[in-house]
Length: 382
Image (tube, rainbow, N blue to C red; front, top):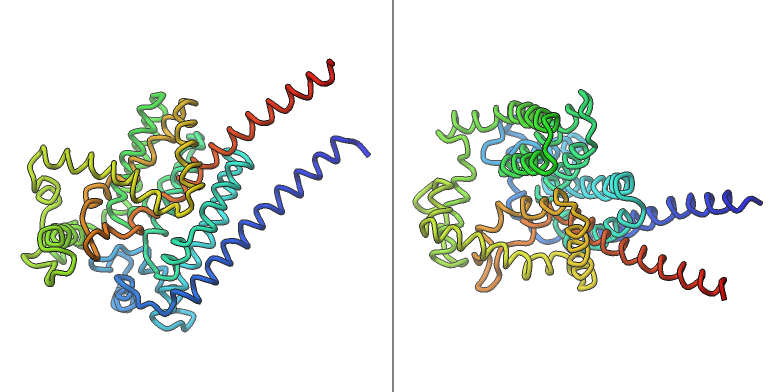
């Protein structure tokens, strides 16, 4: 039998079997999480079914962005009760997330990076926990991943433009702060290895996505007198929590607060200090906790350094951009003294951390292979 055919068959088996193991690990994670966490009451997502029932059209979802509401509404069509529809909606998203993560990363960066990213995602206990808890942060990460994939295909054609803008819009309509994230990702994409074609493509992507999103803030402006009413409420929540402590009552006291008022509550110097502290705490407190396993965090750090050394600056820029809206609240104790904020605010970037870790493993594997081949060549000479 031809050696090339044997090698091809082995690769084919590997490329099918290992992704299957990732899928099994993810399903096992979700099953265990369902058994353990499905008895814990829902937090914010508990309101999703009532909002879905009251919504007369897609953008009519009040202070909650419409995408997650309408995913829940879809599952309610199958006769699921309110709580079950919320849990099943996000669990289904997690399954699609894991499968597409492996497939898309494999196409873009190869087998090793894809498998590491897949396992980092699949065995992470927070994926299971937040999947069962029905939060929209996982859905946000799902659409951001798809947006980045189509953006970096570098096929500046109509079909790719439509998909890139579509997933940008869906991410924004899942969490509205993704407008800032999408804008900064596009800016990074254009500025790193600038070309007029990339600029034109990125402007069209943002324009089409923003037009698709615009009815939601306009409806908020009509209903609540502010296009970002939900985020103004969140700003008040965070400033009251910071001021009065996590156990304080009436965290929405004094009503909506402007985003600029929250960011610059300590002046320009205070905002700059908060930004620096937030990034520092994110890197050394939240991300290690999110990755859960020490080896995963080590591989993430190693992979990030590798990406910088390889001058993959756009890929490296994605992490600080994606966590930017979170770093300003990173120092606030949300639940109890010393608790910090919930890890769900960072979980939209878990897929990216897995890719970084995959680059670390892939680089180490290539180095080991080169060393082995050199040793083998020396033995043959001798």
